[in-house]
Image 1 (cartoon, one colour):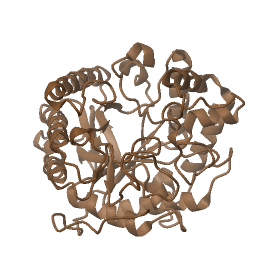
Image 2 (tube, one colour; image 1 turned 120 degrees about the vertical axis):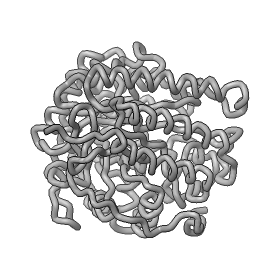
Image 3 (cartoon, rainbow, N blue to C red; image 1 turned 90 degrees about the horizontal axis):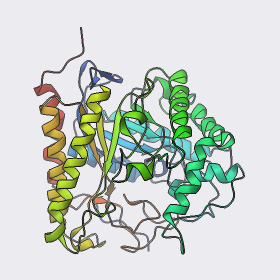
Image 4 (cartoon, rainbow, N blue to C red; image 1 turned 45 degrees about the horizontal axis):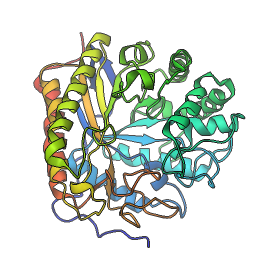
Length: 440
């Protein structure tokens, strides 16, 4: 059954003030600037925004506008969004409908969803980090480009029955050394950067609503590291050659707890002149630091590991002289429940802990620009809590392959929303408190 809960209760006002900032986000001396002023932010992941904004019955523009109002009221100014979905709609665990059902074929109704999303974000003074590919199969991504290029069937990871994460990663890391697969992905890049928004009349390459282009969601080099670095350099160089006004970043997790197996090294991955800032993701439960059924024994471990991980990445950003964004982190509901009504006491504490690391770093003058929690569900509710996502189900913060209700933040999670509101205000003000400014 498809359903939504009623609109947000009175705890959040839906008529948020619009920021006066209008310029491109820049990097200067390891900091973000917008209109010559420090830009430090608390944002979220709204990966399904393009689909929600799609023209026609597959979209829900009224809901998208309500969600953006809610986020603006919380003080959220930065949205990480997905602008690339690929493959046949019969493929498992996939966002539907897809933007690119076959190589070089782009659905205009979905592109209009991206146009509409950017128009609505601009009206609220928000900026977008636009992800252009995906190491994981829930949007198609690198594995789909390989399949199109003759690499053979995709060995889907769990929850696919009999699926193996190691087999999937071994398959997908071959993307970087497959010229045909890379070229098809670059065709999408060229199409997007040359597109003019149908609603605003502004070319994407000229639109300051876009903060940055992101090469991919969580790209890993695995055992194909040399080709991985060549792909980073080539793809980021292509973006800069088509668009000199926007920032470019990798979308990397950082180094994960297993940097050698993941084929990741923060300094090496972000050393290229065409990469403007550093990204890191933190996943305590996925990485084995936290067990929601044993919070007393594992919560402090999760916080300790998170702090250590982020501090290491801050130091590596300092070596590079580039700002760091903690662009993904998530935490489950209490007891690991997927029920939208379950409490979030441990999540609220963990959100505070992550936000404190970011806030303290900004106030100390460290090269940290912002943080995006994973992810915004808003008024969307799963058809079946803990079950898989299916076509025509409401979009939530949990991608199609994940248990619905795992990490998404709902519009009725009032204690979590209070934490977000408090820290959004403090993080936005923190850069200015340090007196950061554009160089003379």
